[in-house]
Length: 236
Figure: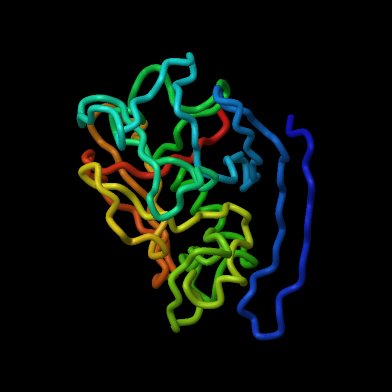
């Protein structure tokens, strides 16, 4: 049973660039082992954290190595902090070893989102016209993207165009980019990327879902395990 829901409904702007909001938010839905609190958003039958994970410890309290200061190895679970956004309020980056560690990154009752769960979320959002830009049901990136931080781009219906009209779903995908080979890739503002494990073969196959500043759709790609990217937890 979902508790503490708040509902907000808005009407679209006359220019049609802002989808209708139909948001279901759970305030302080979960607290991680470090004491960080997270709001959650309900999308269809799923409950997602509304912001990126920012814990520096596994669920059992074991520390995760800081890849920016500790000895770094791709085989060891590490987190990284963005140099472009020193505050961790936008979350931390985690490498594949941390995402796939049996000690679990997400708080009790939550888990790292899977490839299958991302597909279900996309299907739901695409089925709701208030979250779709234009006439193509796949054009949902703008409804998932945050309203701040995006590199501007002139094409309509994308996160980088009128970002104040983004985030109808309240998913709040922040364009913090990623790390690669333990170095920040310098693309802050251009994209948001999220780990997605595979339910069929979680040890071998991993994906990431990417929201770009210049594209109306959400991109699904096989992920490079040498990358460190954001994590969104979803309720069990």
